[in-house]
Length: 144
Image (cartoon, rainbow, N blue to C red; front, side, top):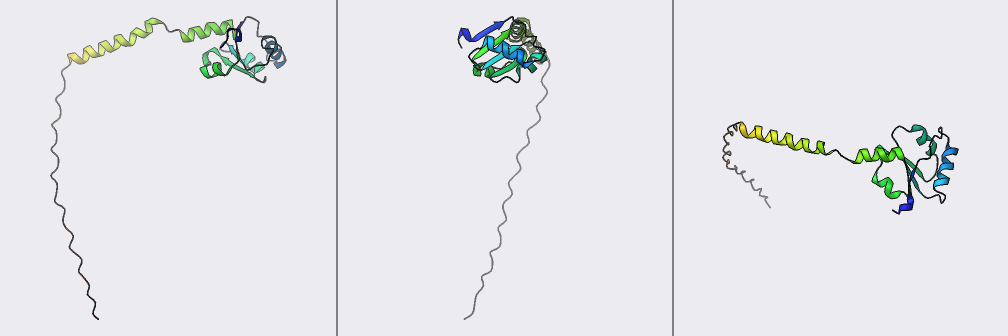
């Protein structure tokens, strides 16, 4: 993706749910009419409603942004709040990553300190019974 095709816009998106204002905004940002992905903060329902009827425009919240949307878009427009929301979503705190390791160590130590239960004795396989042979069918003789 080229640098020119990604835009962070601080233009207020208060379109009050009107598609005509949304169309003006898209035309100013994307005059060629390429496929445009608009990434907005969570909870911007009026913005989503305003841009939903525009052709070649896909609106996603930062919480639901998928790589498929990014790959398909020729141009991506972020709001500054959406960039912050996306950073919070993608950056994991390092303290949470170490917690499961410590819990696993405690479980392993507890498992070593308790004696193992005796294994159940193995059962012997059942002896095979000989298969009974079927009696041969009697031959019929015909008289001539």
